Length: 77
Image (cartoon, rainbow, N blue to C red; front, side):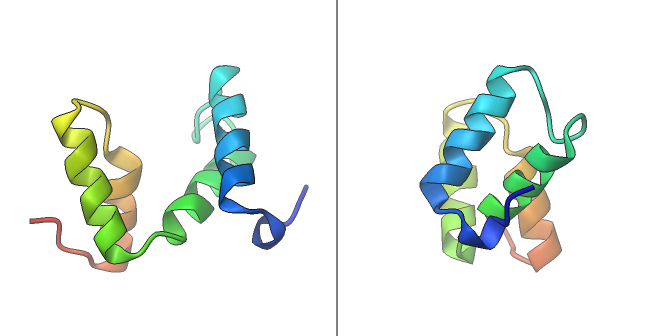
């Protein structure tokens, strides 16, 4: 397994999309879960808030972002 710290944001994003494209989720694939966590951990609190609001406006899921916000004590509203 590769080290997450050595991966760029783009590499992480590509790998997430590839695994999700194969039908995996963070619950069915430990590597995908770790990639998702790393991706959200790299976001600042303001980026997390912004992305939650953007995805809500688009009618998209916000579960991973909201979980990251809760873990970090970030107030969304």
